[in-house]
Amino acid sequence: MATATIDAPTRRDFLFIATGAMGVVAAGSVLWPLIDQMNPDASTLAAATTEVDIGNIAEGQIVTVKWRGKPVFVRHRTKKEISDAEAVPVSELRDPQTDQSRVQKPEWLVVIGICTHLGCVPIGHEGQYEGWFCPCHGSVYDTSGRIRQGPAPLNLAVPAYRFVSDTKISIG
Image 1 (cartoon, rainbow, N blue to C red):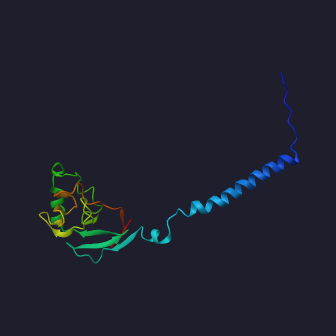
Image 2 (image 1 turned 135 degrees about the vertical axis):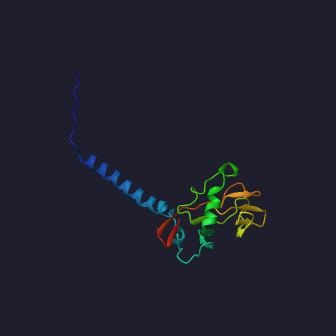
Image 3 (image 1 turned 45 degrees about the horizontal axis):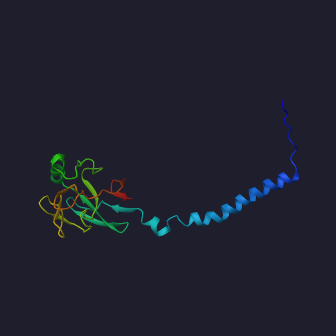
């Protein structure tokens, strides 16, 4: 059976470990600015969320706000608009989504106002379903932002949003 002997640490061992540690610190101090510059700047972070005061939006009114350079429609829906949107059979829809899956509170609809066909901005309270109508190519959306007619393949997108209070929402 062989016996192993352990040599006592020498000054050379200490210098080797200290040099390695200093090399790691130096590499970290060089790499950190390169990695940190990839973070978004303050103007991008500021545009990441938008707060909207919904207390002054009348029932039936659509307000357009800007979020990340895109129009966002905030619609205060009437009871008739809500019941019409909820009554649509999902099997009739090109992009099947229930109204309940598109809203957090039935009276408030928040959608990105860009037509999913070629990126036009639809006009509110227009079209057969009183939702939105894209005059460029004829896409028609209902009061839940779901595509009902025309060439658009998808519903109007629903951004991430939350109710901060009863009269304010935060988009983003």
